[in-house]
Amino acid sequence: MTTFHIARQQGGAVASLRRITGAGTDKKHSMQRQSGFSLIEVSIVTAIILLLAIIAIPAVGAYVVENKVPRVGEELARFVLQTQVNAQPGSSAPYSNIHTDSLASMVKDSTVLSVRDTGSSSTVQHGLGGSGTVTVSAHDSGASFSMTLDKVSQAACPALASVRQRIVDTITIGAEGGSSTVVKSDVIEYNALQAKSHCAKGNINTFVLTTS
Image (cartoon, rainbow, N blue to C red):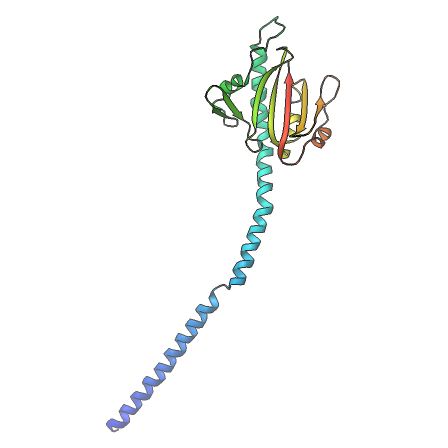
């Protein structure tokens, strides 16, 4: 075999190798292009995730609020019982000096209620909707006292009233800017369904719990 024939055969082999290598490279690039996602596919997936978030987040928030109600109720019940025990015996106005700071001092280490010192006084947040607070004040010239919870979520209603109706004398429910309704008193027997009907949607409900 002459040198010319050998060179020709080698040249043919190189050309064949180039064709094989080129085909492999083209196939690799094609697979890389096919393995990605198109803009439309990404947009569809993003829209689905956003839709699920819109549906799920409020439901999760309502679930969290609803499950906090018993613990908030326990803290308020503890305050009521302690206040009644420490009330001035034989006095016609045993709660004349009660105020929100009385509650704040008792629940300052609570893991449920949050206490914020605002300087001259303290603020107690109940965590049952937005930045709602608990305010304590004397009622009926100190013969009784009330606890007012504002900005309560509808998710906490009527559970909040239900867990407290056994230790308070009067329960009033109302929405911000609207009228209030007494759902429990000496002459009104508490009914959970009726209490729920007086709760408005959103963090706009106000509960007034009065006890003596």
